[in-house]
Amino acid sequence: MRPATAGAALLTALRGGLVVSCQAEPGEPLDAPIHMTAMALAARAGGAVGVRAKGLAEIAAIRAAAADLPLIGLVKRGRHGVYITPTVDDAIAVAEAGADIVAIDGTDRHRPDGRTLAETVAAIRHRSGVMIMADVASEAQALAAQDAGVDIVSTTLAGYTEPDPPPPGPDLALVARLARTLSVPFAAEGRFATPQQCAEALRLGAHTVVVGTAITRPSSITARFAAALRQEHP
Image (cartoon, one colour):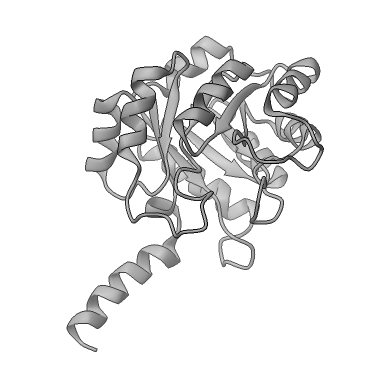
């Protein structure tokens, strides 16, 4: 495994830039390490300062193809409850696959191994020097993650932990609140669909912005265009 990038230098590399989330859902045509690696390389060529990738094979493949590209890694176990890198063992596997930062669920929901967030962070620290990102849904969770000792927070789960469907756009109000209350850096993530929204997140105080579906999900991008045409020609 390649040595982890020094923490301060890594955060500096991400500051003010775009991180592209290169993920595909099971069964999608691009759901393979070779495709996600190509997507990551295309993102870097377009100016991304880092990538976020799901799956141990995908993380390892991207690391092998782009040794110096800042890489946020995770695994997903299911689609409900705590499913983003839910256990300490998952986090260590992500680190060993080559991620510089491991993204974990940073909410206050019950974890499969019974640990609290603070216990999870401490256990990861005990076993690895990897940096830790907490994916949260609220300001209270972000502050708790900061207190637990994470290196960076992300608004990844904003709008996704309630029974109601998420709103159509990013939670810029949460971004603004976190800029006022957090002392650790944070990423704005979740339903960012336009360059203007990304720029606004930086103006509000985000350290970096993560965009996935709007860039790396061809089926979703195509569906938006097709739906617009159907409205004109039912």
